[in-house]
Length: 203
Image (cartoon, rainbow, N blue to C red; front, side, top):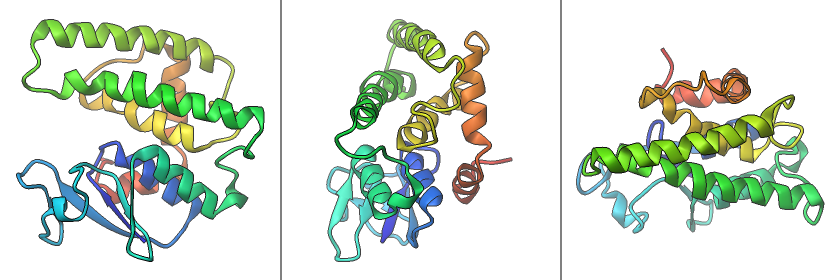
C-alpha cells in the first residue's frame, strides 16, 4: 500500500490510523502549494487522484481509495484486533458513523473559510463563531470521557486531526477544558506522535 498525504492536512487522520494498526505502507508526500500538485517523486498528483486532494490510499492491487472516512474504515478492517471500529451492526457502530459524519461536515468543513485567503473578514468571523458553538457542544460530550466511544478509535483520529488545526490558526481551546484535554490526550499517544513526527509536525 501507499498513502499519499500532505503534512498536517486531513490525511493525518489516515496516517494516524495506519500508525495505530502497524500495517506496512509506503508514504509519499504531496505538495498542494504548487499547480499542478506534485508528489515527492515529482509526479503530477492529478494523474494519481483526479480529485486533486489528499488522502489517497493506493492498494496492493493498484486500485485507489480516497476520502478520510473510507480509508480509516478500510485500514481498521484490515487489523480488527486493534478494535478501532466497534463491531458492525452494534449501537456503537452507528454512533461511530454519527461521529465521523459530524466531524466531516461540521468541524472539518467548518474550518474551510479560515484557510481560504479569498474569504473576507466577516465570513471568517462567522465561520469561527460556528466552530466555537460546535466546540462548546463537544466540550460537554467529552466531559468525563477519555475518547469518543470508550477506547481510542478512528473517529478520534479524525476529530483530533481537524481540531489540531487550531494550533496553526492560533485559536485557543482554553474556553473548553474537556476538549483541550482531549486533544492533548490524543496527541500524546505513541502512534499519533509517530505519525506527526513522520510528517515533520513536531518541534
